[in-house]
Amino acid sequence: ANAPKSGSQSAPKSSAQTGRSYPVRVNTPSVSESNDSGLKLKDWLCENNISKDQYYYWRNQLKETVAKLGALVTEDYKDKNLFLITVLKGAVVFLGDLMKEIKCPCEIDFMVTSSYGAGTVSSGNVKIVKDIDVPLEGKDVLIVEDILDTGLTLSFLVDLLKSRNPKSIAICTLLDKP
Image (cartoon, rainbow, N blue to C red):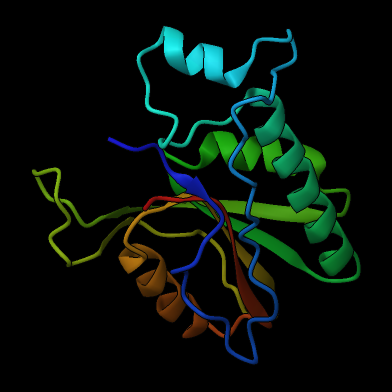
C-alpha cells in the first residue's frame, strides 16, 4: 500500500467564514535527497524493497513542514482566539509537534469519532464518541488532522462545528492519503 501523499487536494473547501485551510504540499523527495545522516533515499528504498513510486518522507522533511505550518498558524492567529481541535487518537502526535511551533496563545480540546464500526472500511456514518468540553462561540477554531483519508469525517466535523457559532473555522492537515 502507498503511504500518504502530503498536502490536500480533496479537503473540504473553506467558506467565506472559514478563512485559510492549512494543508501544505511537501514536494515528493527526489531519489537523490539525503536524510540527516547522509543516507540517500534511493538507497534506503532499495534496501527495503520499496518502489520509488511510493511516498516516503525523511523525518527532517516532516519537521520542516510542521515548522512551516506552525509559522503560518502563528501569523494568521496572533491576534485571534485560537482554539485547536483534534480527533483522537491518530492526530495527537502531529498536534503536539504543531503546538511546539505555534507562537501565539491557544486552547486545545479533543474529539473522538467513529465511522468504521467494527470493520476497517468506513461505514459512511460518522458518530461522535467524545465531544469537546467547551462552547465554541466567538472562538477561531482550527481542526488539526494528521492524515486526510476520504474527507468524510472532516466534512462532518466542519458542518457540526459551524453550527456552534465559532468566529471562524479552518483545517490544518499534514498528509493527504491517495
